[in-house]
Length: 488
Image (tube, rainbow, N blue to C red; front, side):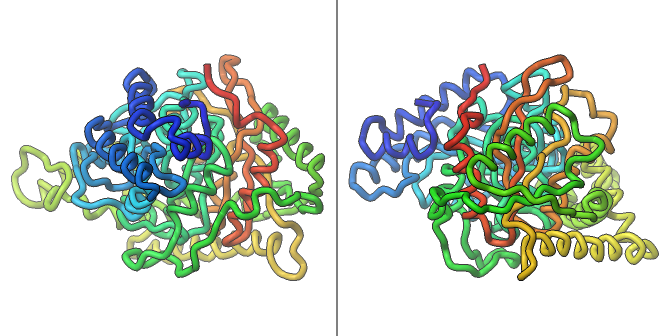
């Protein structure tokens, strides 16, 4: 039962072949037996109470398609009852008095929460090694990272500890772990999913989205989690839509843009081979490959690592030891309390980004760094519009690798922040432009010690083109079985 897709589990529940309580218990038992460190907080009593309510709705024929289906939440979304730590000592043992909008939406749909998932501290990282609670292990090879910051979400779905999980993507943190763990994940257009109750890292970049086994499952989850929220000033006022409406459309005549910048130096040969094979599969499905150029791609790393730390330094200033969060036990005065509480509560990567962000926002450097980065961000977005929009558009979607390599070994990049940052070279530009992008499994590469590790294919579309992306991904998954492969 744990190997079924979200859609298949829904059918089993609707047909009364299994109850929500039985299904939740099955997954809770699997979580208890796991050694991946994917979950940070599980409360069997809370989960089974939700399952009991779902069973009542199913019995009363008052159930939707997602009612009774289990889900787990990245520990960036605040949850009433479960701890919300953001992977940090700063919020160790914090329990929110309210639910994030995304959690509310899934609760309203009748989904059953299994617990909270491990992540890089305040979503800052590419390998899930920055969590105060220790790294999550990649279920395909426990020597490897699962990707970050949503590593717990991707690992939990890959290991079949949960059929679906919420995640967040600031610079690639849905797509990259989905790629490294061999599952499907989608980052929707910026503003499509409410950020209310999602602990902020970089407000102009943070975006929630789902990770699941298939593109179809991700579409069903997006149906529930998108929509306008007046409590979020960046939420977009758009009518609700069915993201699964175009899943079975033909790909005949689809123009796929292949950026030459995505296939240069730095891309591992095994990753390129898997991505090229996937592109050939799309040609068999009737699509046409078109070489395009996204010339500002190489600038996405310096631009991102000016803008994101700047916004992080502002957002994380609220954690001062006064209102909530970690407070130092021994201090002399108020200033000393601030310094010690933040020094003890934040990890090294978070401190690094706060310092960088404070520097680029400081007097005399704002114009030279932050303002220039914002100007280049506009140019990066224009590169995508030149390819995807207008009467002279070159393609319908863009495809390429998600990560330049397969998952690396735990500890390999711990002392080299720049190497970690370079792991996001192919995902950052999409986030900076606010475009939707997703990752689907497309093969395997060889790890550092010849272990088999997944490769993901990235699919990028124009604003609000999620239904097309899901259609493209679904047709590929109907023709291949990479998404069905499971870790031993």
